[in-house]
Length: 541
Image (cartoon, rainbow, N blue to C red; front, top):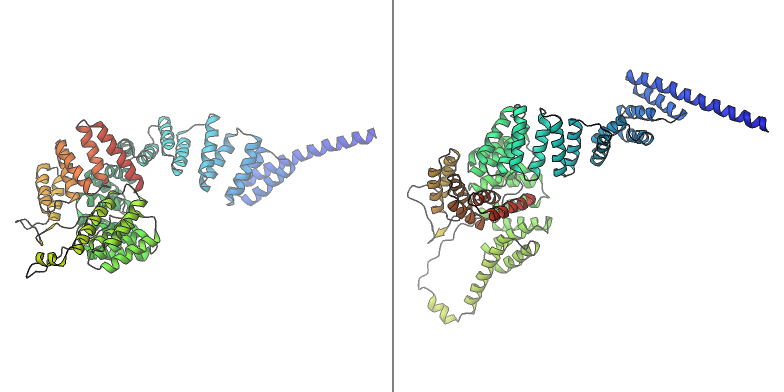
């Protein structure tokens, strides 16, 4: 019995030894195939090595073969086994993190790179990679921190400067983002992306001439950059250069004719400049491309109302409500249309619903208040004795001309929203005009051109003329406020911004520049409140 046991133990030892030798032999054969690019043969050899004796090196190399053969999930399984056997193996951690990048597993990337840093492997590229994973998950603050570490390890690399700038921009820290983009462009002057992102940041700060300049640079380097054309078109629209804005959006559309957002953006510019037929054509195309878009139907409804086709306008706004029942803008828009058509009961129901969906919806509350007043007056008229009504009635009444009904929704989904121009004020049934024959839109356009040229006093004169024509013109008020701000007349600037915001409580650009004017005037608390409002509106856009 003792002899048999000894024989068995000896045989087992020989078998183990034989398996180890086989594992080594198959592993070396696998490496040979790997170096020759014969991945199927390499995979077979490494599998044989693992069957003979599981070991960390064979798992790692078989994972490489799996990746070469297009099996990333199986590669991750092998790399996980390799890390289980050797938790601090930097090569296995690096390969798995790279595989996770290709698979879009951002949490996996972060976990493996964190482990890699813990064992002392730190490079600028690896920190940038972890930063990109944080950014993909919306963790902008952590992304900015990692890009900062990447910058410290390599100051001459433009990529982490640009990356941190984008993370800061996503957090609303546009001024700091601009500084980083400026560093990136200094290190790599031929990168259109850095100019484009800086232009976007300038636009968010209301510095549209600079935004245009950076978009110009980006387009010069990359003439087919649709985003650059789109952002420049939006900046031109904010400056009142509607023809240039339309030209940019049209070029972008010619490059990507199936993008509904571009048609919607261009339609907002057409609507702002009073070209409602063209706006309608673009919005019809948007609906064709995206029939399930509530925003597209809402916008098209506004064009129908502006052109006097109220039944179609109401139908579109009803469709928008059906597609997105919790969209307060749709309820407010239809309620506003009912109000202008004198259908006050229906207006009241829609506007109340809009306020229930968004209690702080000031525009809906304003129209609601007007509706309630109109209903009260209507009831008074109905309740008055017939004799009083007859006594008050003129012997030969003449029909009073009706003012043009222009119901425009706020721009929907353009890269930077364009605030549409309100309807012209009608007094005594006649639209007031100045003796020079120019409309409010004409004066506004000229004023903005002068503003862009740095001729601030002349700009103020033209913009004031626009407001004399049309007092409730937020675009002109905002532009004149900006001119006053640049002239360091903060008191007048703030007054204009106050009025622009009263007319359009979601006027992002007005809040942005009023914050600057308030800070310059020593009102730190007011500036802080405006900056908070900017962040709030930016999140909702």
